[in-house]
Length: 365
Length: 250
Image (cartoon, rainbow over all chains, first blue to last red; front, side, top):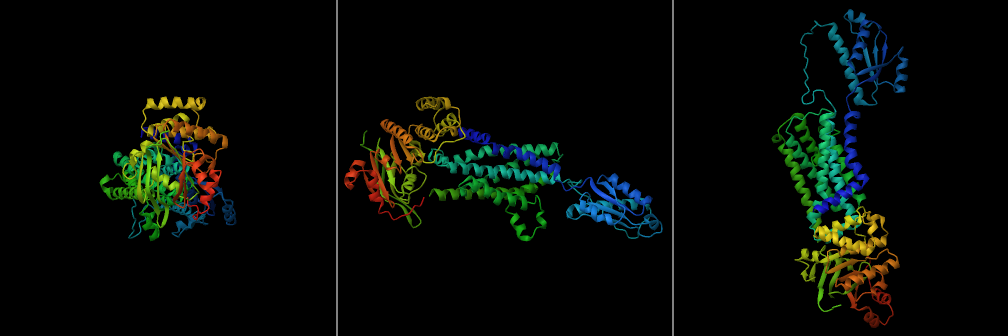
């Protein structure tokens, strides 16, 4: 067994491709998701068309700059320029102040402030518009501190578990899930398929090693590597992105190991079907990675999917692992609250291993 | 060569895949120290029969013992007593000669010391000392195959199964490979070999010819040629295979 595992490490460390997938990709992905891909907005270029040119419009523009969300790219002279500046693509929104803003306000009339946002990216446009609107509301509250409308209802919104709505808190559990899936399922299925392709699997089966030992020998190194990957991601998340760690660390590590084993058993199942490395890779990518990314709730919220996809998402192990991770890291709940998710993963693992054994037995008969 | 006691004994061995009978009630014996040629066209069922004997496939019915062990009950014991080398080169290309020897010695339960001694003797014999720590992928195919054969013999098996061991190798290397086979047979190892090359069949002590899942002929090459009144094993093969009805399944 020891020799087998050593040999497996030789395979991994001598193949530059698998090294890059194993160690380069997790770090690059985490940094990408953490820094570059974010749904927060910051430093958005906007243009101002100020027809009022009075103290109020000036004050609002100042507040917009001070908020940190906006950078003023240019001041426009007339409506005609709006279209062309959007087309140049330099700015995401134009804020238009109607003429006589201050006078109208003084007269108790409504002053006009218009926000025109580039909705080619609807999410960003929405966020920009609501940020801009909130700056204007702030100003309104500033100039009329005492005016209270009768029967005013102001909902007080509090965002719990991620008060700053940091996107990275969502990306780290998601990325970790995907990387563990990739390393465990894809890499093992490819490495087993490789032995089949080259004919060495036959030699191993003819040897006194039991099939269980052969599979264990192939899988154990990947458990170790996937665990190292998980640790690296968690450390990056904790130290670089200040990801909170509210719950028990032991529960987190335990469930991570469970998920690695679930993914490995998926990899073993794939390798009972795939005879070549190519095939193992295709099945892993199409049949596994794609659903994991799309349906796990990592990119698209599961609750807003149409019901067939919602039902389908239940068989994706990643969905349950992401729930566990978020529960443990962000909410700090105790593992006893997550028993259902843990149980589902355990059952999935048992079913997958059972299925692989059965497939293997059929082949042997 | 002591062709006295059977080391492989097969009786009425049958393997069906659904309604298809790949191996149809074959019976034969292989004697200790013999070079036994297991011949047949593609799809005749020889690979299936061989897989049953080496314990990676289960027969539908029939009896067989390999090295004195029953193929149903004692596959563990059988696996320890046999060596196997397939047409598809069966060492790890990305490992060095030393690592391959250590690995395969290890899975057959040899001690570190035994492995070291055997590795020494092996590279000395094959003249591969300077390549000892090079990946196998650096070696030409002929050398790889000789090495694979030596590695399959590392644990001193009683029988070695060779599944078309010389596929894709040039005639000179094939000749050298057969010298190694003779040498092993001389040391008392029983050789069970499948091949496509009829000139190789001439090198065997006895050959069996499989056609459509059955053994149609089994004797020494000289006797077979006499029996069919031809001059070469190639003609014997053509005589027998002419009646074949089955297409390739493998």
